[in-house]
Length: 381
Ligand code: ADP
Ligand code: MG
Image (cartoon, rainbow, N blue to C red; front, top):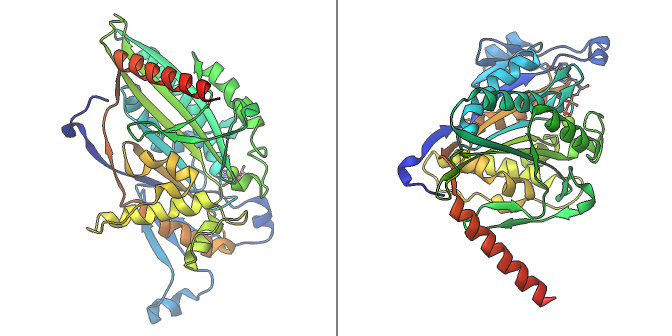
């Protein structure tokens, strides 16, 4: 990487809230709606358990307004959500900046709907890939672009390559610069949106559970789609720099259990009933958001696979957008409240963003090192 300190720009994490509409069952059961969009950035969460007049008078109402970068109302279209969260990141990615978009929220609030979507209502994964190839085609400079993607799942702290599921569980490794790599992940080069779609569909079929199936298993797995865009001059000089922009798009597991555990102040435990990665994510968000206040909190990225993988997205070199999902239902009040409080914390997090370069010679050195290591491993066998 060729950077000086001056190349950094500070970015605040962008936090957007999306509330889903009441579903058919909720409507039939007469469930009350308690979330209201009050403006482009303001959301009101009513407490269904209190008589609002009395509570206001007594000044202990738990009704609360929250401010975010944007609030998407219940019937906001998929396109509208894409436009206000992800579209603006593309320009950066094609010119060598990293970005991350992740869907956060309890199970059943619409995270997979936002990221993956459904037939006829594609989500952020597909819209981004389509727009990415369109953007690259439109740029008529003397540059050459390559786009590659990988797709993985973290389930019970095990990483699986969704594009090559027979490869077993994969490990995370750090290279000499401290960058986290997924050892052995397949990276497919894609030349157009159609090819990317085929890979995405293939990957979805290999998720631990069909991602759209509303069941407990799917709610515990995190899906991470990584897209890497490299570009260099067509002149193809060995000394030319290659700009590298990476985009992570993440459909997280349901946040409810991690949030409950945190509320009770329990220490992190291993076990199938607690999602270690989400708990660690919550802890990282808390530690990072308190940093701004002059506290030097240690951020435990190493506590889980997810936080190791998202280290840059949270506290490092990435423009990051968090799409927070909530249910509008009165029955989900406590869950929505906890989620929104978390989300408000995340707003305080700043990342340090810089453009990424790789030089062609650096590639050669890297491969040299790799070959050397492989030789050593073979000889040790
Ligand atoms: P999660 O991934 O957060 O567990 P899902 O994306 O599976 O939740 O959504 C749960 C259900 O609600 C699905 O049937 C989904 O189609 C529906 N849904 C979610 N968000 C919306 C929305 N904004 N508009 C319409 N239906 C939605
Ligand atoms: Mg889901």
